[in-house]
Image (cartoon, rainbow, N blue to C red; front, side):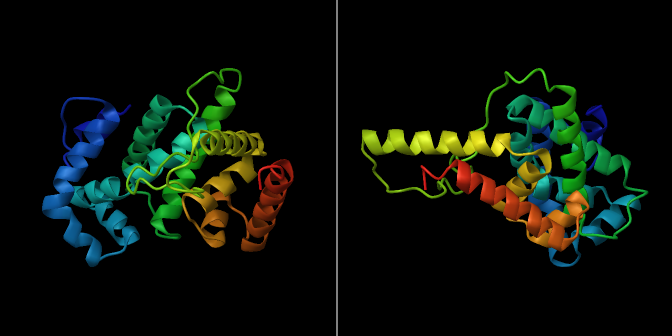
Length: 228
């Protein structure tokens, strides 16, 4: 199914993994012909142009959101290979839906809704196959190299062990949250999406989203009180 994405003129083709091909080709085009577009049009306007055949616009959107979607899916499915496959499917669906796309919400909202639905469906389909590699939710950011809530720059062995224990506890408790609460926390904490954006993805009102996150964080504080 990823063939359409890989063979699309706006994406290009090459050797290596599917996600690697998409990313490398997109980045190559993004440096030469796509970037200036972003200063003139919104993502929604670019997507509407894609429906009219703007392959460079599609390439720009893939370049802009590929890393974000991969990170989000990592945290949803806890498996690197699966996250890459699902990301390919996300952008494949974006391309297939180009002619029916309507700019009724932010492009990113529509994109994350596709990713969320795919991740939820995958989790339901594989609920008895949870032996995959676990994503480190508090691992260093791939771009900045920074760690969230790092105690100090040069911890000794005991401090490092305590920090790792705390991180593992956080990861475990986030995974244990009910599905919607878990998705809301991941979007709020790690994707830095606001209440309205999260509500649009989950199809909730802003007040319902705030309530959902309040319950999620209250649960996490209670379960992690020995670490805070």
